[in-house]
Image (cartoon, rainbow, N blue to C red; front, side, top):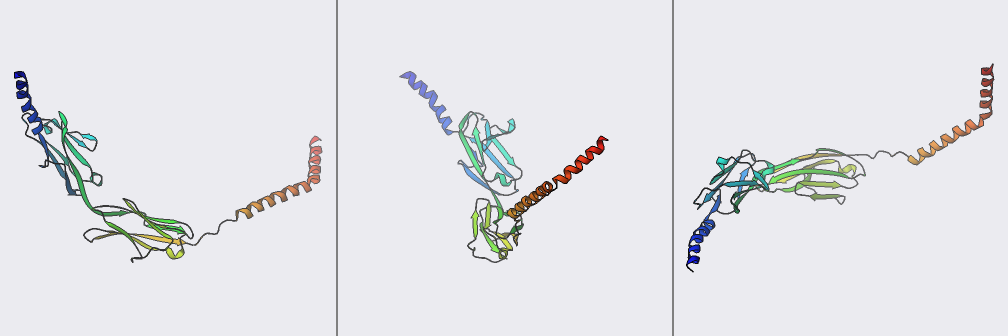
Length: 251
């Protein structure tokens, strides 16, 4: 019994120490989010608290370990991002205690940027064919997306179809008509009421007359037959010329 008390006396302080050690991420004792504007710099700071000995820290960006200098890994560690990019939005950075990776703290980047729009702005189509106008977009926070025709809101005709994914707004016109030729404006409406636009010009041309394939094929066959019959009809004359030429050659 005395031995048990001695063991507990030794272990309890150690257990208390392990439990007490924790990490702060940007001075927060919980996983958090860091919001910053596109192209801004960001600094992430991880700090060990309640430790009695030096502790080594490691970092991960998503699932990949971040390479940091040894002098930047003991008890307190910083990761600097000099210029935030689109690709950084939503990425999590995690700081872990090297000797016990269950002790960790994470921060998720929330990169803010106004809408940016993209896509081919000059589109031509043939009457009766399907045509698509594709507007690519990026925005954080999310923007409300919609179309204008000739700078006016319009109700989509029955042969129009609109689809939207996380990064594209697509307008599909089935069996395009000449009257569908117009300027189509892709509009991104931000939460603060600001509009970002991109104008697409659609020109629908008259359908080109298709080649009469069957008629051409028939004409080729008829022409080939005429040539064959012509050769057959003159075969006697051709044979005589060949025979005469052969006689002269023999002389």
